Image (cartoon, rainbow, N blue to C red; front, top):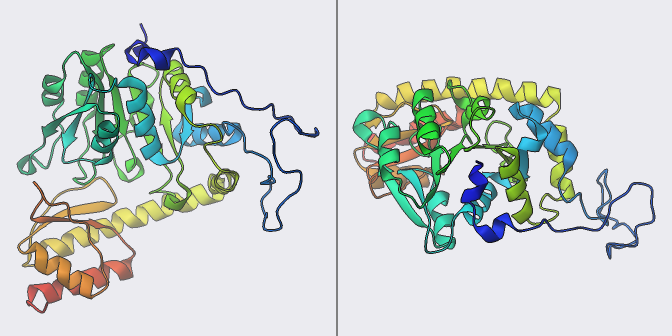
Length: 355
């Protein structure tokens, strides 16, 4: 049985939007498009024409990048759209729920709330480096748990789920839940991607993005990878022409070999800078703890959060504060060497109470 049976019945029955036919070298009078090009149009594909309903060449390029078959992938506007599509597809308003960890990426809760789906959160502990416990996630599930979201590496803690724990989740929930592994920061991790498990587990969906490792956050391009029928379900509810022509073209270019090689070098630089920054932070009197991170950021506990945030803000350095269970913490994105030095200088001032 496919996990598609878990989706809302009306979504299972939904047919994709039938767009006007697109054929090269024809007179297109079937889509109410302009017959002329705008003078500001500088793209390979003219902007007076709608883009492909689903950009096939880009889909193939992303499938090659993430090592899966194209029919197992849907191109999305970042991972955020993929999260929204999944929750809308599988959760009946007021009936179903999602399960995830806490703290984690807030958009899982956000889109669940929009859909009026309940959220069950499993708190991870700072004392165990925010380790993700498969048993606790399983205990949180019930018969209405349609989706289990695991961010790995997790934002904002930097922790990953171990392979044996992920397999336990997949096998124990089997046809009862879709296990969604959000690998937005996967390129910075030493853990193998969950993509290699797609052929074995039909209830697995993996989210990937170009925002971090390829420095393309502004392009808003990501992907959801999963079983063919699950991807078809998401395709039916995604808006037609979801990816604008300029985005499609610039991402196609970014996926060229020369830029992928450059991205690999940059990722290595970030990891090296993260290690340097982590060591330097741990020596500062105002820093009480630096957690290990498999991502491009560090979660850091400090003795006086307000002093740190105020001092850094005065020096033109912005850090992320979450409050709640992380009330004494800041999340620090790893910048360039110069940016990291500027941060360390600012924190040095905070240590001297010069606010």
